[in-house]
Amino acid sequence: MNVSLLLQWFKKHGDSLLASLAGFIIIYLFTKHGGIGISPDSIAYTSTARNLIAGKGFFIFGGHPLVDFPVLYPLFLSFVMFVTGLDVIACAPVLNGLMFSGVIFLSGVIMERFIRRSKWYKGILLVAIATSPSLIEVYSMLWSETLFIILSLLFFFSLHRYYRNHSLRSLLMPAIVAAIAFDTRYAGITFVAAGELLLFLDKQLKWKQKVKHLVTFGVIGCSLVTINLIHNAFATGLVTGKRQKGITPLSDNIAYSGNVLSDWTSLWGNSHVFFVLVGLLVIALFVWLFVKNLKKKQDYHSYENIVIAFFIVYVGFIILSSTISRYEKINNRLLSAAFLPFLWGITYKVPAWIRALKRKRHKWGVGLIFTVIAVAVCSNYYSINAENYSFMRESGIPGYTEDCWRQSPTVTFLQRNRIYFNADSVIYSNHNQAVYFYTNYAVDAVPERAYKNAAC
Image (cartoon, rainbow, N blue to C red; front, side, top):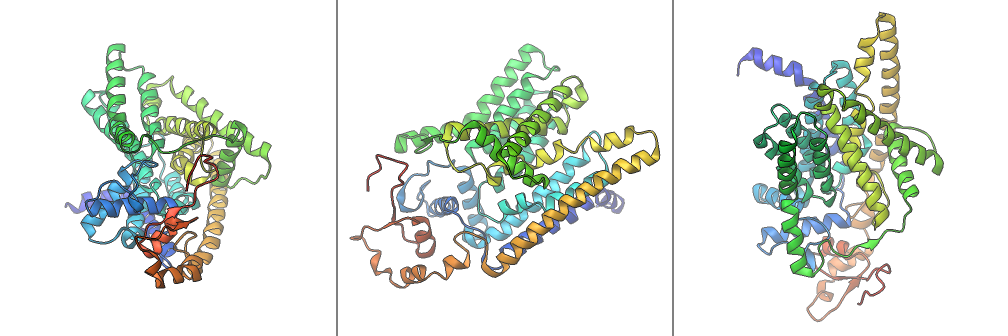
């Protein structure tokens, strides 16, 4: 490679490369004591990946078909196992470290292509991304969000590339990425919805071309998950497993979302009303920005507008689906895919504001205010990470790889008395995922009280 081109590349992306290296080291340190964090969902992904490698198909431990989750993340893990020759638990820390590095680097590349780009602005946000407790939590665990977030960045890239010529051929890539994301997490429907929204409101498309592109994008984007759901229906009679009716009011879900957004920006508040206001104001801000960008072709077809549209659709989907269907309380994990769009959406105009000021002292003043706020937020990130790391380096990441599980007398007993796991025994556990994780034996779960008709 030409030395001058290499130096030019490093000048442009060297900061992103260094930040990505820092991100890899952070994940290495967090997972050093006990390995990658493992939750019940992680066990479903892991056991399915192992069964795929063994040629047994898309089944979790115990021989049950995988229906609660889409199939592509376990398929991705099985591919990693095939390539490395290692079990997914063993290679997960390195895998997640590399994926986190990829997220940081790709984020830097995207910021280089902002309309109002700034090296100073980019550097500050790279530090915020690399040290974000939100992303570190996700990439310290064996969760499908790790792949989902990378897919969101690839979606932004491919959709922005489509805007260059608005050809049907260039639309195939964002449609394929959306299809993969939709079959990685059911929340991937937001990729399809955000794409359809942007296509529908694109003034550069004539109506005949617009309809053709909308149909093409929608069909391809929903193709993989449709096949997955048809398979689920034939395998179990349920397309996405047992789903319970939502019991959390809309206002509470807005408040939970506002709480997460407050944590991301290090806002202090501890009341329901405060979190509801934060949630509503942030959503209103992003809607206002999106509507404003409709007026200008350059702004509408920018990376900034793509991520704004994705944030609106994604957060709106999480809030509404949590109200309609019952699952875990809205938390950082559920909203993590919106972290980068949120960070960019609330800050991307800062460089433009500074350039618009005529007096140099005013430019320095606004720049200083933004820098002080950024330093305060990153300092809070550091405090959170330091507190988490001080615990994790001694006990491991909370979950099944934590010391309280690994050193549990019950786990030790089960590992030493495998005689109980025989064909004639029927064993139930309130943590059957943990039993499988530590013994490699499948036992039945104690029926959840939420399911009134569940039978033992």
